[in-house]
Image (cartoon, rainbow, N blue to C red; front, side, top):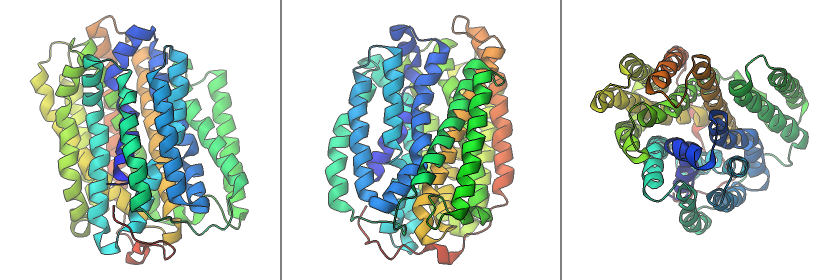
Length: 459
């Protein structure tokens, strides 16, 4: 509960604005590129500092960095709530994401080191269930609040949660650190700047085109910075990112599967939530109600998925989840039309939700059990970075396809016709991820031991 509640809050803010985008567009006069930036600025700030936050947690104390990030997140949420322009909202969303980078990956690390190895699968299942709930319920909650009292209150909601969570974390969790004796400062600068340039290039690709000079320049800068980062990490005695963890096939394939999951999940939800408002003419709240099946199913399935890991294998569960999500999105693509009855979307949304619920717990388990105990924090930060890159990439690719197909918010038919090709791209990416997940071997039992330097604590 102590780390899961803050994780739920920052996960919620990834998508909570989805069903509020139409209202924000009307209120602030925002273009589709501006709406993309309101969503992606959070992802940009988040992804750029995930590796850095993991390193800071190992060096200065995970609880200390976690609570600092949580406190700043609440402060920047207040700024978002008070925003009166698109530029201010985008800036504060980016700062929100930067502070969230200290919360989400460290929540999994703190949970892992606080729970006995034999109970870890169930604990991660519950953690994944709450994470899934945040992703799934965000459009509904965002729609309800936007319809009822206005989109600004999406951010005021974080204030009481944060005020409750900070003292709870301080009371329940003991401080823990990683093995690093000093911070890899050059690794922090190169890695953070490289990821930031990469995600920024992806975000700009949807607005300026994939061959625009500024986009190519950002991709070039990302390549140079990340190559220098890898070269430095190979030489560093205490690297920010131990490259040996990528020699583990399970860890590498789990990260690639996570990339596919978040590409398909965020790319599709970004447009499906708006489809219910633009094409079906629903209010944000009603649109959220119709996506509730997608929200509920992961919460139900994720704890059971955690229990099934020893019997079925994490790789098979992840592959099954990706496959079901692909079938659900393919179904959506086949039947989406301005005249499609809302109830016809319930079954495909449920399939997507079941698939999502089968993915999160097994992938998190693979990440923390396929590396050495001292590398758990950095592995969690790396996996979270990959997920955010997938989110930004999914939204950017689908936005490019949408605009290229002549999509707009004025015609329900034009919006739907431009959305459907993007859904098929998500289907292909999810199926590719499923094929990769089948190659994930069972994690080594020895990697499940908690770091000796930490003290167990109740969660």
